[in-house]
Figure 1 (cartoon, each protein chain N blue to C red):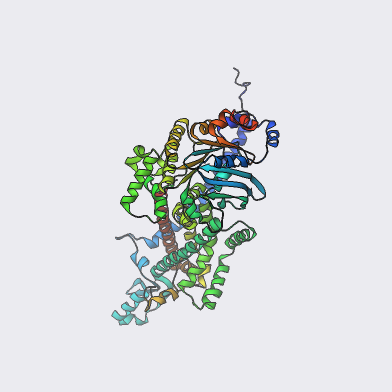
Figure 2 (cartoon, rainbow over the protein chains, first blue to last red):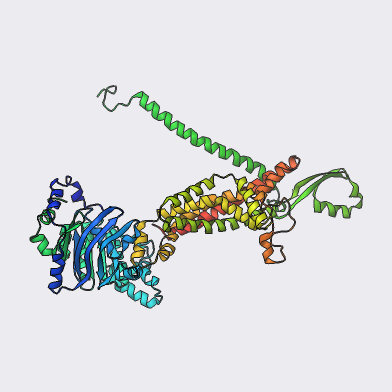
Length: 293
Length: 345
């Protein structure tokens, strides 16, 4: 992982020596969690089962099993290098772009379909599973063209329809009022927070079912972060959101379920409230209370 | 505080060292400037005598719009006359008595260089088109599709080595390959491909660098929206790399326009009466040789006896050549700036 941790973590002294010791104490697998989720009648849309993932010879994920629920916000937390972004990028197969990566074992099913089967159309998958990146990446085109990019790829040319979707997406991303008078201006002229919301608007323009967010606020100031978080709250009713974050307050504020990762293993997965108030594992407790990370 | 002992006092030695380094770099820059200025001024001063003239329209239109001719100099009715070939013949028809007048003649010293200008522009446009198509495609393959491995490293090394091959070798290769083996004869087509191969390393290397400079985020963002790889490259990578690619091709243009060795066996004629568009069939256009400015300079300055009249042609041609290269380069720069403003990032 190349993600920079928020400043608060970087300025802290190096991880305490107890961290590896802690890891050793925890058993690697918690299939019971997903099983429990299923048994409680939760609506699991993404079913990650026993996944191992490799960068060349390095194993980044060990036996990850977790079920992501429809129309909920699931937060993946953990220190840098714990594999949370890797897992996120497995869900729309963005890891395919990196040479030497492979799914070593296990399955990832969306609506019961194994997305790593050879007959899966990755393009179709990515239309269904949108993504917002850590560093906002609006294209150097107009705001309008940014939003319509995905739609035009699908061959949509009807100007009126495009206009309609642009407005709907920008409203959906709480950006419409700020940019409605300059849709033809470059997306790069927007502020950092606006750029990130533009990327969210671009993602929802193609009507995905699931939106993956890879530390969407790590480069934003607190005000912009608050706006994006507010937006996540609005989106949760329509989309399934998986968010990777370094900011534990953010996970606590805007997610329904939280998964804590450490050194490529899923340590604990539970309701967010549970994770932050009554974690089952000492390691989770240590991390969420800021004692290491 | 005593000035001699305060803590921030720099030593005389350190200051001298700094100053020496500063002057070394400054002198180097000035020296380069001086060399460039000497070359350009020399060509400009001597060339402008040929290209410009004292009376209206101040430009020597004959030199720019006519083909080279032989110059005849003779005494007639007590006056010294200088005439080009055609003018001299017309003169002799009007004055039959002049038929046997004693003349001095100098080849290529009258008329102009219009066919050379046309030939050079055609060679540049054609070869740069071929070089950009091939080079950008190869760069896209190397940077976007190919996986880094021993083979790709070898290909890159081969491209770099190609840049070091002397241009005369390209000329001989083009002669063997296109002129003889493909049977294209001495032709525009053979010259285009030979010159294109010569600038390919520059174009490929620079295009690859430009593609690399496009942020990864643009590719990922596009792919995450359900674009295929080719859609991503075409719509969201290549347009942003174009300004950089054009910058490199400006260097390529100067090189293609100026090289003599690759075209002397493949495309260039010493003299040709017809202009390139004087062809019976469209297909013939590609299979005709052309005159070219650098080759004309070479011929006039090395293949015929030297005198003041040939020197005039040489400097005039060099002047026009520099002007044309500057013109093509300027238009590429304008195009690049236009693209840059359109896709700013």
